[in-house]
Length: 252
Image (cartoon, rainbow, N blue to C red; front, side, top):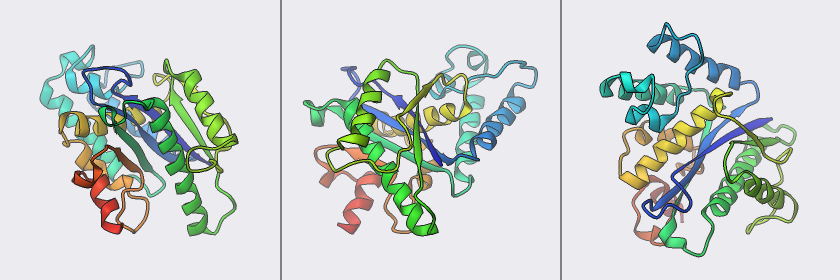
């Protein structure tokens, strides 16, 4: 079983933001304990006197919002975030990243939540198919786990639809169950998902690739050179030179 933890960055309806991102991290079912332990150890390093788990929320860390981030210098906060990048970069092959960055003005008639969810589900499904072929194993199953959100009922119905009647490109065949929702404060894996979504949002919304560039290799799930885990939805993709668009044009 492969688990895909997902969170959003940016808002689907905010008029001052051109991008909405759905992103996260996929791991084998045996991996969450170890990924969680990595953040526990990072907390122990930076906050050795803390007795309760600290939620690693990327935008709060970067902007120094709330404690303990407000009391940290900007340099230390950025150093901590780069250490998170390093952990993702050196993680095992069973850790793969997924994200869809949607340029909302390019698709005014489309619901960003529906479109990004559909794209992520399709690429996750294709990833599991690839693992089957590569490993010669029985059918791999997947489960999508979202942070609790105002779109919970909507996402639930979308994924159920993708599994039963299908998406625009066909049915999702590898999901073992309808999506699950939980609080990011309760699982470190959703904190990792938040970090990935935020890194991608910063790249596309603010042209800040400082974190994105560190983790970009984890979106590549094969030797083809294509970043299958990263999708940039924009109307003029033929003129876009972001890594997602460039690698796809290269094999077109």
